[in-house]
Length: 98
Image (tube, rainbow, N blue to C red; front, top):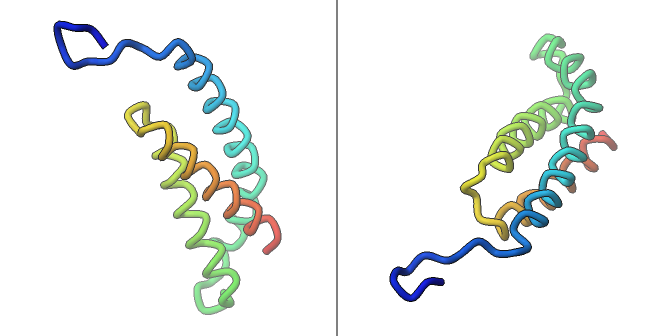
């Protein structure tokens, strides 16, 4: 922090933290892409033919897509990115088992 204002200087590890987050995000995107064919298949089903599992799958994929968009936001605080990435990772694992 400079003495003349109340802004913080860049953290020396900031670039490393950003690179780490990018690797995490890339892995999450790969896992999401692996589930995309199943998502397309389930969405193509007639709504009345979908069971509870299919409805939950669609909802979880949509929520995951929205949260992954949040993870791409440079303004999202690092601690929130970390927490959200963990939530997305857990959900992707659950989705892969459905």
